[in-house]
Length: 264
Ligand code: FES
Image (cartoon, rainbow, N blue to C red; front, side, top):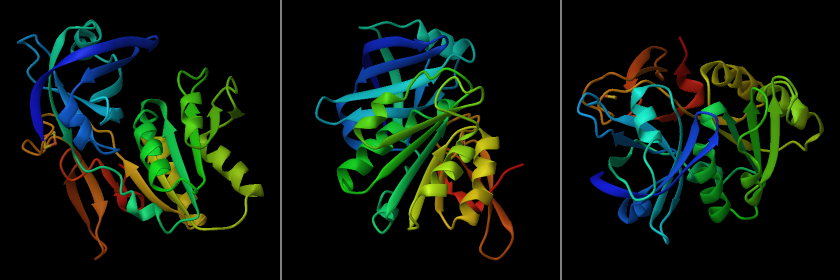
């Protein structure tokens, strides 16, 4: 884990209220794993708590980190107002990323992203494609309506978008789209990595159990410290003994076995 001040090399509004920011952060870019996040600190003294933001991409050769985030309050509003050449304090990479080794024995990989859960799937797609270039990757992306990201995933796999109103791709949820895909797909072993809204993740659990698909979820939770000290980011998980236990999303996660997550 590194804390340092980095220079912003680009900042762009992808869609109203959704921004992509790139930083020159060579050491962090070397260490970054898919599914990890960083804490971004605002310069204003009245905003002491950092803002956790998932990694969208990391390029160890160029030494760059890329983040996609939504403006949801005064902190992210301040971050979105920064421009190329400004500097920003960052701690990271934080948390445990997605287990890539688990995909080795599988015949097909599903990546499932909904809303702001889509960006973390990009670095994951890139690394899985490097590790297992022959393995088919299907990227299921869920939108409310018009897409604001998507085609860039086609460098690593087949993109299968869906939207609530049918404005892009299949009309329905990502679960509907996966069922539709499996209707005509060959049988085989599959692993599914997902990040997105809780209703989406909750719906994936019975779908994955019915189709015998191993799942890994990256949870999004409100955070305080971001590194395990405040217990402000609890997630409840099933234990092997049939009980449950509270884990910290920031430190113990944010990635957990999908079958073990208990959604409230
Ligand atoms: Fe403090 Fe997770 S945010 S323990």
